[in-house]
Amino acid sequence: MAPLVSLRLAMFDCDGTLVDSQHTIFAAVRAAFESCGIAPPEPAHARAVIGLPLAEAMAALVPPDAAFDSRLLAARYKEAFAAARARPDFAEPLFPGALAALAALAADGYLLGVATGKGRRGLETTLGRHGLLDRFATIQTSDSGPGKPHPAMLLRAIAETGVEPACCVMIGDTTFDVRMARAAQAKALGVAWGYHGVDELAAAGAQAIVESFAELPAAVRELLP
Image (cartoon, rainbow, N blue to C red; front, side, top):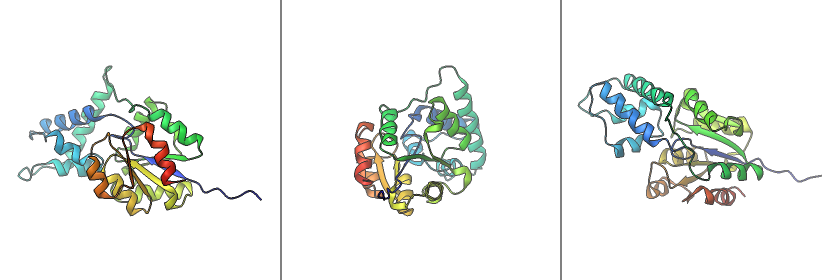
């Protein structure tokens, strides 16, 4: 009888991990705030909340003395982002080495998934541009329930794929990704090229941090041998 092989799941964040979308995100935040007559936040402040559900992120960016509906800001952000995406010069590239790392993990038998604060429509548009929609066995967005750092998205992915939590690794660039993974009893792998710093990721509980996609497959194999 052949030995049983445990399923292993590598979950990826999107913005700041797979896709370099910071310029579009910052521009959309600025446009949303300016359209509502509110001074836009500094990029460092905006960077700190990327990864949260959109309305929650907008609420965190509103100055304390500005009584404003974060849902309207979120709607204006979506409008600005959609307008940017419609321009012929729109660019939302994958980070260098992302495709090769995904292919290497798939070749090793890892299931792949995405868990992101983006809405599903936006995520599917992004993945579709890069021909990646069929690459992932599970796709989780905050449309279906609580967003990061709540573990709901990751727990749904684990249930859908039938893996054990200990056989799942969440790969992301923010402390929200790390905290979600730890809350779901999964492994947490940080990437150094995104929105939160290496020290922040380590303090949040990342069990490993990589500096490039070239290092990522080996790091995943170390956490999920």
